[in-house]
Amino acid sequence: MRSFKHFNQASTDICPVCGTNDDKETVLIGIDGTEEGNIQQAAQFHLDCINLNYDISHNLIYGRTLL
Image: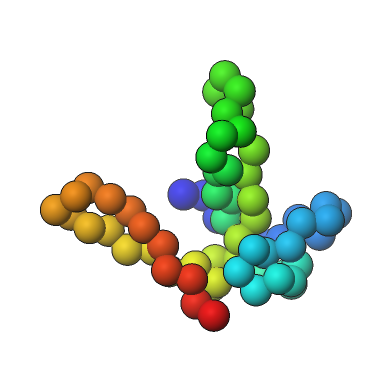
């Protein structure tokens, strides 16, 4: 997963977890159901707002939000 040093503040997006557009390290996470060919819409998340885990027995990556 590629990260970006800055939140794209030129857009009206906010981080879905913390509800801000603070200028912090950011990742883009694809939005289910928005695929069109090889293109998919994505939401910006602050990297420090998400916590990903890997369940090796089910080959599943899942996230827990830090509220």
